[in-house]
Length: 108
Image (cartoon, rainbow, N blue to C red; front, side):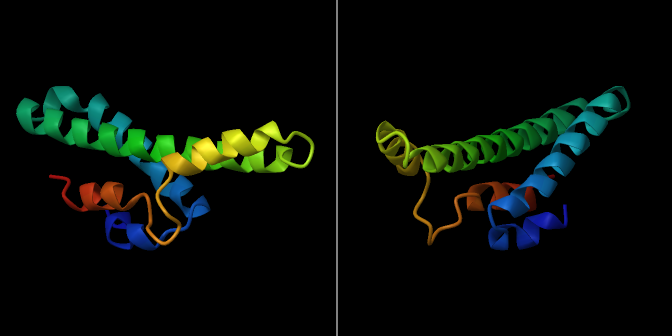
């Protein structure tokens, strides 16, 4: 997948398009599963599923962080939730999706 090489440079919103393409690719490969070699197919689908799951988790965390940030002025308790979310995300200087990018480059 071409995005695997530029994956580390994506910003948070830029993750959405490759995530959708990975999902479509996973379902397309699953559709043709009866025609493909089983062992190799299973490894490939597992790798795609793991990447898709990680990207989905990050997307959810980014979205929740934005929603709680919008609430902090009206509800000080939102700071606590925002802090809990921030603890689950890597430091801003490190792209949190790099493991997914490496996994994309290693796909069979």
